[in-house]
Length: 396
Image: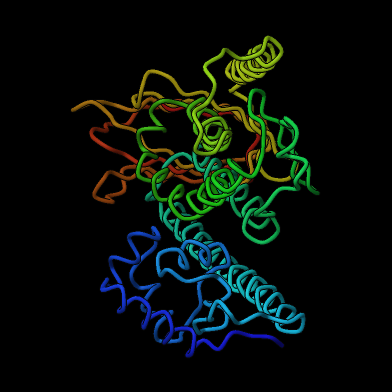
């Protein structure tokens, strides 16, 4: 092993910094890093990344060779082949250590994010079981987006390459393929100028989906329940498509030429056609989903049809072999009444209605075909157990 002596390296850096009369904070600002990193170097707790060696050497007025040797080298001193080999091997070992540290950090961030996400999902399930969240059909985006974030996050954090092959820099390539990941963004050419920014965006998206999305979505749950089932699709599309493709497109084009200014010219016609095609396909999917938004498959072999309209003052649901109970929260007018209609083809169902204080307004079991009204006002919670019932019911 040709490792760098961390203590000796740190003492050498501290000595050079003091000779120049600059503080750790001033050196950190010149290198665009935190002053804590400088402190760790000088105390021997860590060493800089390979990419930092050249700018660090320039700021301290020494060569990279002197940094690695942890001493100043006289101009008359010549290095033989053996010394050169040792120096090169030190750089290789430093680069390998850097990669291992980065992998360890990535695994830690991903593992903690997954743990937080799982805990949040369990908490959401408990809240729904206790009747504190309304609209089971509106909770599906949490499972979908969290699942996507955990799945793709495993690739982004644990397997994705930080550097592209050199032929990406030599050619204009808008397609990246690596195992399960296929990225084709019209108008964006991947290279090692924009790739680091894209990778950071993808990692950030996965963490946001695991940690932040469930919390934000639950905070907006009541509002989304009022908007209707189509709101769930919009949320998923905005998160999955907007959260991924827009950052890739913006960052890819912004940093495609590195620090150089992007040439002022319009997109190629071919790229324009691709962009228009993607937008058209997304619009068609959203349109078709809206037309058939009343149908959604839940459970194993269960089919449920759900329609919601007129804000939060109306709810109607019909179903076939509806499994378990369905819960819904309604906001009734003052001194209003709730009309209940039940059509039974087979079996019976149970209905339990409570007000916002938890007081039971109605608790009936083994109901069959019937219609009746009950006085209700303010916020009420309706729970229907239709495990043994086939037919339909509605509340108006």
